[in-house]
Length: 282
Image 1 (cartoon, rainbow, N blue to C red):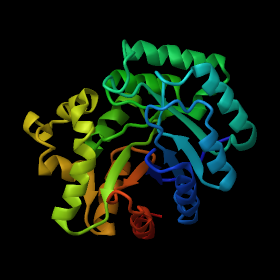
Image 2 (image 1 turned 120 degrees about the horizontal axis):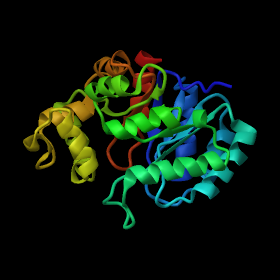
Image 3 (image 1 turned 90 degrees about the horizontal axis):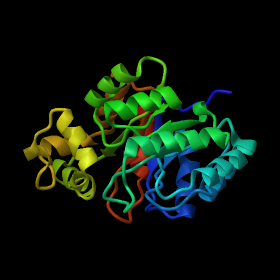
Image 4 (image 1 turned 30 degrees about the vertical axis):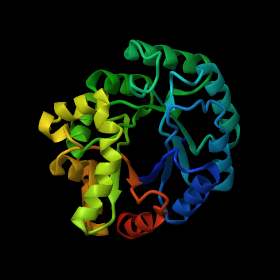
């Protein structure tokens, strides 16, 4: 049974309460987005109850976790929750897992070994390899994602990373990067919103900073809230057509699917941006 992610999906962070996020996914389904990625943060979410409610409220869209944190969620409990959901929605649920970043948890140590151990536990718990993806940025994690899961869900990346990731992973595994977007033609306003989201916390986290440096960005680019060049690359902005072209660049670079995170000012609805993009993406 094959999961259908579509070419584009919506990425919705944990700042939305469960009810709001469920409503957003219902509308995303109506707009023909293929997948709803649910950012889970570092919280304990192994029961996957919020995922169950969203799947029950929809009928065609695939739902993926992006991601369940390995340090704060017991693998045995998570596997049991996966099996419960799979009994009802096996053709629409993708379990995304990852180690997050060392600044978020006190117990962070030997992250690669943690990923291997956790995937072993998911194997024992009955979670099929083709129903899980791994958050991966660096070459070693990307290779592990290709070998032990359906593929990789890289976060805060640009098409150059996607091109390199595809070379590392080979042609078969799923590659589904996340990319941020501001549907606004005012450079000052859009860039300020993008910088607010990117600079704190991501430019304070070594795994993301190191990845950006590997891609050719400089220490100056990642300092002081990020250069305009960096912010414009990580948080696309402009007309719907301009943003769509930037997102499609990931597909041209080898991605199978792009998880679009539309940014809106705090407290505002991101759906106008998703509606505008749907008209040119789907």
